Image 1 (cartoon, helix red, strand yellow):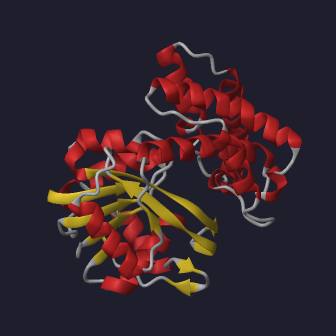
Image 2: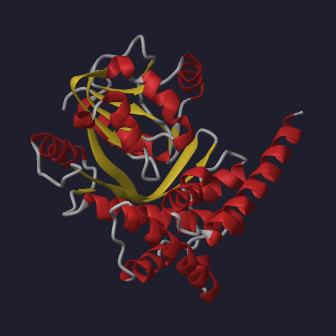
Length: 309
């Protein structure tokens, strides 16, 4: 794992890209971008906790075949990212997707082959992202593994890489369980926070917990049909974890809504609704919340467009 390519220079990609850059240097680590982003990033830079990040940015024409590609984009950029990275994928390239939701690995496997894709996500990272400025208060960790939970040579190689770079990680006994649980947590608290503009500590109230139970029950039902069993104990456990994250932090979807950026609603409640339709399971809570998020997003984005005129 000597040649590392990252796609997505938001809070997640920038943090882990910095750790890998500090270990391997610019000659071995690059951010894969289009021409417009390359010009913008090289001119404006990205500020991480007040310091300009020392990243190297490459277009698809400039990039080399990578040993490891880490995706950290938003879901609505995944299609463009797949096209951008085609020239960087070689016979032995490993792809690690840190996207929210539970669909990116399947799409990447369809594009490049299941044998190139690991299952993964980032959790516990607490940051604020405004413009080209990213501020971290907690770095979190990467959870990853093979689809069948085998401890393969490439899993060991990435563990060694992350340890050397100072990136916290977990290789769980059951990666599918962990991914479904992260999806349940994200669907619940990203959605609620985008409507309430709530901080993590403001989730600590009975009405939010009751709403969380309604959302989680629908996620549990569709997960069960997809082969993922989520025990009830995880609902209370997730609520306590989220509420403990502090009075300042907010979910990424809340920050997107506040900043007038497109949210990942389609990959949270939208996925629950889609899977509910697939398996004949009613998902009224997710349907109502998804419509509310769509309406609010329309209002916010329309307001941003008016300001730019």
